[in-house]
Image 1 (cartoon, rainbow, N blue to C red):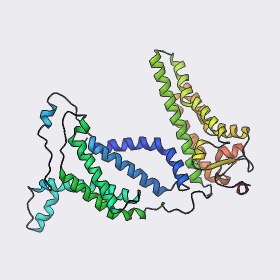
Image 2: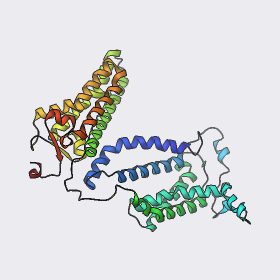
Image 3: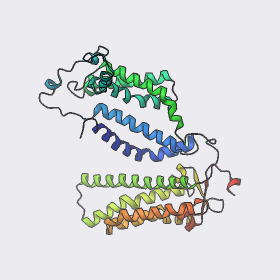
Image 4: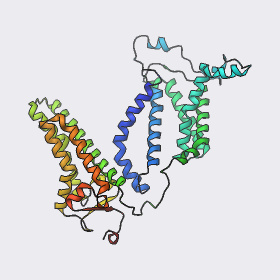
Length: 368
């Protein structure tokens, strides 16, 4: 894989993992801070996360192995302190063709790449953090300085000697890129889905998008908890030197992956007055004829939704594992398709349990 492509791939993989981990807390935060999760805000936040990880990966990846003679190979690297020294071998163009030919010069390309690398930083700092141009430029300079110090210290002395060059030209190019990005930041305002349409504390209609978002949060919570418990159970078995029979191991795995997480989320739902954690993240409240649902209604919703999925998946995992993914997709698709077609977008669980969903910020009078 090309050396410039590898950091991007590494950043993308880590970004996906982090998005999965922080998705539910981010959804809950946005609904309490802005009243809803707006697509434009999500897009910019994801882009900023991917950019930050890409910048870190660009500094660190690839990590060369340390072996005999490592410092002899990289020992001739000396910091470059003279501004624009990289352009010493670049000839002054005497014609238009020579001017356009500068674009193929490696020194010009490297300087230009370092300028472009920090343009997003200036844009994000000014637009998302609401800093001025000076603040964005300072952030670009300090970030670039941190990058260069990381390189001159061999990743802060983790390596016996530096394996990348400290170059003052990079500081100049990166800071210039941050300035350019700060000037271009108003372009980000044109991305739709960022405008505040109401106060964060004001009730809003229960639409299908919000309902589906809560369902996604619930499924992610079930998956997170299951994976964590399954890994913990496996670790305990290894540490204890316990060797279970294959059938017993399958049932233990089903319990850790599905049965126990579903029971935990059921308890959380009961504690939340019938509303699941995913519904609470998007500020939805389950009601039965305008009041708190009874325990029977809560159990029916649980069996028709997340609990039923977990119980079925646990049995499938123990008896016929190959069908687990297909069943989960079919189950989730069926629930998703009913949401926009059901009254108040209450979904299949609401239809079967006889309950409705309202905005958690609605007053008791508004609910009735």
